[in-house]
Length: 352
Image 1 (cartoon, rainbow, N blue to C red):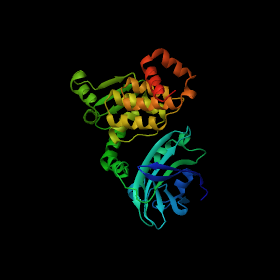
Image 2 (cartoon, helix red, strand yellow):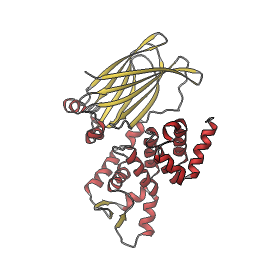
Image 3 (cartoon, rainbow, N blue to C red):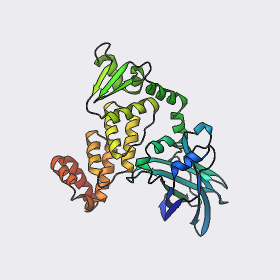
Image 4 (cartoon, helix red, strand yellow):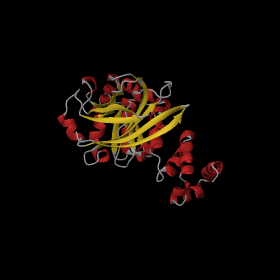
């Protein structure tokens, strides 16, 4: 159906087992048209893959349902990798949605042992509205780009619990209750607290906010004046507060690039929304680059996120020649000696 795909194949050692890794970029053209012309439960597009492992060709097919696999998930895109080879094999499949900046905005990984003509993937890979509503940031001239990695483990490899299919977990989080809660926020009914952020006003519910955040609970029970229903926020943008409230009510986040994720991380930390912090941190880790690593490092340092800090320091160490002349690095050495020393220590351990 006109899709474009490019491959890169490598072999690596993992727990004394050879793992054959195939990385490929799948470009799905005219995605919005495919959505408008497609039907629920009907494959929108497919892509055949013939991958060679130990001189044997293994046949696979990527299958994308732009309108969902069935009525239950009609608001999502579903994505499957179907295997046709006769031999049983252990596979790990990762798929990422890449935006126009080259940043990863959605990533899922699943690991399973498959026999003949079986498949793995996700019935709720991504909300379709995320792609349609942010088409100008995600779709390249209407084309959707998916970065896929298929790892094929040689015979004898043991399936472990290191990687789980998070599809069931996500579907559980996006239950009917969560959707009703989101609608409650959008309808502005029975609200008893008002957030004033710049020129914008957001209506919400104290009980729901208190259940999700101990900071809001303390605010509404003891910190605000009695019968007060107004909260002014001056250190977080309107867009970030709106995204935070959407997450509190629904458990979902919309389109987030690194800059958005950093701002939302600050809000999540301020109001102690641990799961939202983890989502934002994952986006930053997935998209660390030479032009943003210093900013992410400073954020991790200010918010005491040692794991994120370690990722940044390791990245700087591995890309020192590309970073050492940047103005951000010079500023870091001037104003944050403790952080700079951590980087130098890591460099010395690497033998630089």
